[in-house]
Amino acid sequence: MHIEAPVAQVGKSREAVFAFLTDLKNFEQLMPENIQTFEVLDEDTFRFALKGMPEIVLRRKEQHPHEKVVLGAASDKLPFTLQADLVESGPDKSEVKLSFQGDFNPMMAMMIKGPITNFLGTLSQNLGAL
Image (cartoon, rainbow, N blue to C red):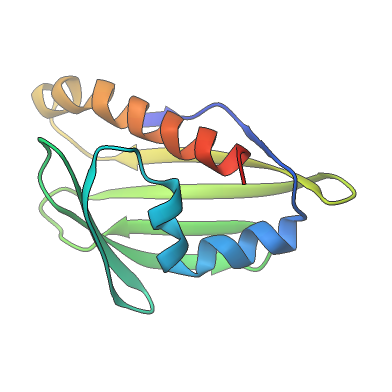
């Protein structure tokens, strides 16, 4: 399953956005209002929970300076990645495209598509407000 959020227009340079996204504690600022738990476990891992949803642990899988940050599920039970692609769009402006890639059975995919789409949209919207 592949889901993409609308591209976020950010009033910061690509370098500044990359630095923001690679400091995992900053993800708390991007989370939806219904966040219940947020905790940085180590420099590469954080956990969060939204009301009515199971807890999710994300781990940094890869990063390419000023271009891309990839987070993935810490558990192999539900394998997925959340990727942020960064593009410079002008002086002190950049665009961030968030995408979700997961390997789920059709029933699970149908159940989580809406919540994941909304979650990505919120992350994208909050990135644009930085």
